[in-house]
Image (cartoon, rainbow, N blue to C red; front, side):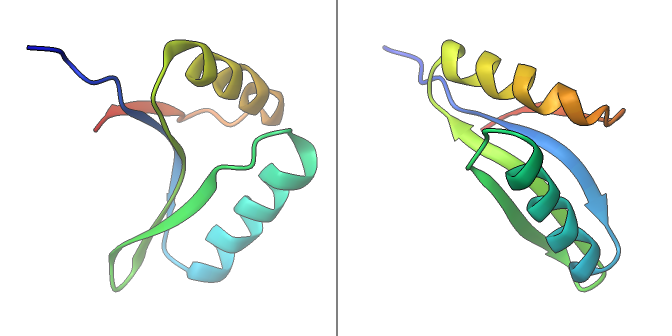
Length: 79
């Protein structure tokens, strides 16, 4: 049985969708990462994340690119 490699990079959770949109815009302007997305967790929680990434090299490249922003709570989440 072959295991699949699928990870996302969680940037942050926001209370307002406008704040999440601003973060996605900032990521796209300041880095080379194009996979920034917003997930609606609840009525008042919006998650900004990158991915999904299906191999280690692309995950590592995105993680290194996003580290330029100096955001403290970046997490890797297995899908």
